[in-house]
Length: 139
Image (cartoon, rainbow, N blue to C red; front, side, top):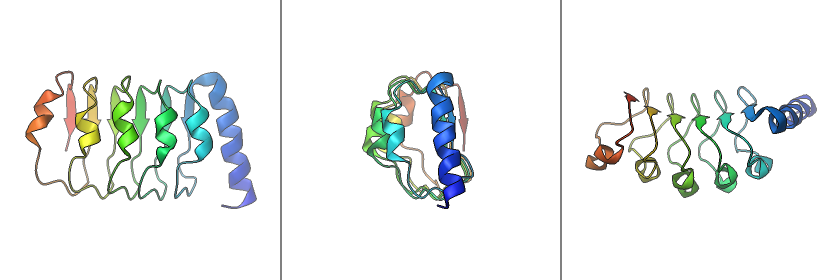
């Protein structure tokens, strides 16, 4: 990343500590910045339109995230730590390269909205029925 985009992401992270909302969309990111893991006060994180192929352990620190959007990336799998985000209510993973609904999602029993459209998913696992709070599913 060039110096200007590094400065911009640092500014966004600084403001997120106050607002609880961090938008790192269109930053050309290939990995989630490790600094995100220490931002436990975040309630919303948007990582749309980047070059993420996978998630790192940085997601483990997002214990208060309610809304997570990682659309328009190159995700194939998710990090196991995602399963521990018990407050997560909205998860958007549209426009990625996911072929199988990851087990991590099936552990998120509090999910109300799940967007997986424009991926390569052909089968829904029976365990999807355990997402009792799910009100909106986009495939």
